[in-house]
Length: 549
Image (cartoon, rainbow, N blue to C red):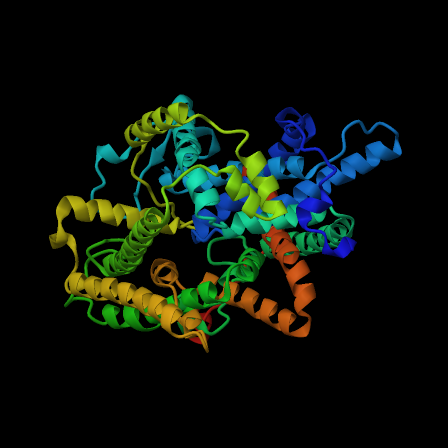
């Protein structure tokens, strides 16, 4: 009989704690520590490729592990006053994801490039925006930042979402029953942690995560010894040969992106690889042969009037095509939903009849969901004011050099320059190619939606690549796509061998791989500031270059 209990029936006798009991000192301290860790991870991922996986599971799992260990210790000492609840676990997970999300959504990790001769001390005062591209570099691109400006900007972009979601929360969640996959998955995960069976599995998952973390951290430490300068070390290993390496096809031994690949859906990773093959394997080598014809041979590699222009604007075209399709598609779906609802009955707040018709879990969740909310009279003015502040405080994005290319920065820069200078700034035939890729992106999305509606037997729509994902390697290359596809391959083999174990432990392994290598960046930065350098430079040269030297 116990096995047939629903999740909420299992917690029926557990009173829902007040918000003061949910937001505890221990939850805030844990959230703060984990937020620092996850912010490092998000900044690294955002500055290298811009691909950020969902970190909800890792945040929930680590929050559970830390507080559960602390409460177990207090219980043994007879000092435990307040048990650890699933609501408190959710507070930790929410705080961690929200805090680390600021590093991504506020765009600070792609906004700025520090002057090449300034280091950590000058970080707040000297930033140059979008200096990788030569065009448009005027004094308007330089902004001396103050701490107050940065804090104000962060508050603006952080609270806009809070105020804007309030008017929509009832309609989207209660009326339209939208599930929000990542949030739903996290809720099920946290609920399972706080059942006896789930707690045992969580302990095993934490142990697995720790092992993966140690392995990833140790691997990053080992690789550091061979990277004394740029172009040295395992990160520059020509896995598929020097010619492929020149076209950015190689495995760079990044545990982080192997872990990201294990979390991201298969088709996302395959789309990235397809995009890399289309661009760096086919398009760019052919366009480079037109140097001196399609664009001036005297232009530098970073000029948007040269090969860089094709890389940036074709990627932008695919992203715009994909974005336009989804905006129009969601608009159509929303309008149809409103019409369908209106034809049946007027939209109302969830009534007692609705609650009676719903199952027990739905009734209980809806009841507590409707208890606490920000009034619309506060939310709407707050959203409006902060939106205006965001527009005024926002500044054009930039692009760092070297290890962190911040891929989206140059694309935003290209859009801005195109808006100012017009299509005359594009290199030869770039507009025609961009239009072609724009149309192709829309066509691929239409094909996927059509197949999803009409072809149910083989579900062929699953194999249509994502144009947005395909566009990312247009600028970066295929090295990270290879890492992520390796992660997908590991997960695929694991699922074939034991699907349940893969489902239970793959997220833990992936989180450990991501956290371990990303956190190595902290001691690596300390060593760099202290002037310590790796003792070995491991480079790979062609036979001709080696014999010449």
